[in-house]
Length: 437
Image (cartoon, rainbow, N blue to C red; front, side, top):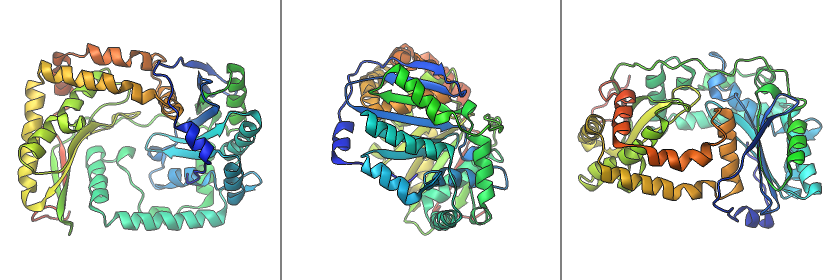
């Protein structure tokens, strides 16, 4: 999605923060079959809406990589009787924002509009057309294919893109999470591919509708039904295959003229509903997710000056996503930096953390939580995730308490269950004495 229009008033209003109280989430199933998540808030005259589907890149067919992304990109570039320019002009004239989001699991369309009935209804009419009657114009498809091909060719020259691609392939193998569209894949895509993907994956009974803002429950019910009533019947599976958890340690060195080595290491981590989520979340904050207060930053940057930044994170997905550690360093010290990263990780997994580290991490995470829900847009994003990943409606209410309940023992045991330092892949792009494989 590339449409992102607004007017000064909209930007001003969208910057106003909500109260820090945890929002009350209402949930129901629309007559269309869509699952609806709604937070009513009349503090500002705004409405945020999103509709998500299990239609991310992980749902591409093996020989049709890139179809999911192009299907999503073209949805707002022609719908019903509206051309690309018509959609852009109508949204701009209303002072609204029509956009979207796309990742490996999900594809979605979003709208931000003033809640005044006239502006709201006009903006929702455009959104409904984009969702329910995209036309995927042939000329625009060719233009977007050319744009995508140019982006892929550029990515092939960038060390960070090369590293990410090689890392995902090494971690996930033949699983869809490890797949990437190549130039030849995109060149072969036809309009029928987009139509078939849309009809199979953008179904009402698989839609997650999130609404946040200045409307009533009755209005929210009507909007959710209006946006999903005429979606396709669908039929494609909304569940991706399981990820192979036990992988063999490997190291891949790829030559590149960059002045620095780009290093990634990791393995399959956890899915979004994993019972170890909170111990791993807190533990990773201490390991490499807490910026300057993390162990990796202390050991690699502060103690040895080997990198400006080093990080670690878990990427929980519908299926098990990656655990990743990453950094950039001078080529001549890449092997030494990697040695100290491994030593730090080994010690962390074996010996766990201290009580003082845990106390500081909890204070930072819990203290920062109000900033996670201080705007309509942030709450909308949570509603979408809660719906898509089938998290409890009390997720936001419970977050701080679950963080506070984590113990040093839980962190040590969770990392020992989920992170195996001797069974990880390592990718070095711009490696010293690299060998391209």
